[in-house]
Length: 481
Image (cartoon, rainbow, N blue to C red; front, side, top):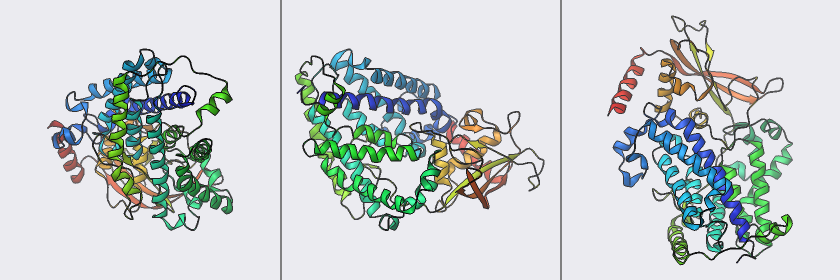
């Protein structure tokens, strides 16, 4: 077994997944309490009172509150560092399984109570990939080729699911024009997005064709013998790299790239790097039995996701059980043609007149100030910024509950909420009024962005506004229980 190269593929999977888990728990440390904590924008406690444990299993049904959220997030950071550095391998199979199982349980606990702020497809993807890692075994033991092939099956479902949702979705995937819009309208552009947007139209068309090749053809080759599987994986990794450098998609493409290590030719990589494995012990019989039990479990749970891949009513980014074990994936079936942004502004004037001195709040990642260069964020995830992108969509149809709570928190000068932002224009005292303007954004020339005012997304409001007073009262009752 040690000569087939699976040992180095396992090493790449474990270290890569450790890095992604580290990002996830750092985000939980920095953001979860402000988003879903005791006084967050979408508190988890009222959710847990309404949803039973069996529907959303989480440790936080037993240990509740902001202190528990922080303690589990910090524990996740420490365990992730153990996985990244290889300390989790030091104690053999039992320690390795324990570390990876705890990582999965801890992250599952956040996802299942995170509601809107944790409703992204890459949460389920990390949980599925992280669960399989429990059964990869430590570096000092023989690798389980069966589990590595389960990662190939996962890589296939991610890539092919994304390709199929595009074929059934927007017409621009058929006429090869999606990239004429995508780089400008994607959720979180980075400094290179404008360059990609301004590439010639034939290059954009070639990019769409490459997308179809990577997502609809190459995944089938993941299951063929080497070197075919490895070449297909290399092509998929090149495609994922192009997405990584052209936008900020949190850890979605980074994690997908780690999973796409699984079809690579481990023997070729080992020879290329001139590395050899140390002595490897056989896995304990119980571990081997558990491994094959997981193979049977995944096979049984794959029926619905596999059927969904070829369904005319394909759904994307869906879990079929509360443990997120075998899921369905897909992304960007539709491409937005225009970019809209919500800009929140406040004033301390006595009256919310147009002539009042309005000052804008600046978010960490999403476009706001037209002169500001978009940042590099990924694989870190700015959850509030992403939700602001969804909120600005013309099809949204009304203000989300969390958005109204955000306005209230800014009017209150809530420090926990303000820590999610890049710039607070009212450091000494909160504003009397807040409004939200609705802009159309395009990449600019002299500045990074041009923007055109479309209208008001939210009229000027204060804490005395009748609707806000009602929302705040409901919020306080729910939090108090």
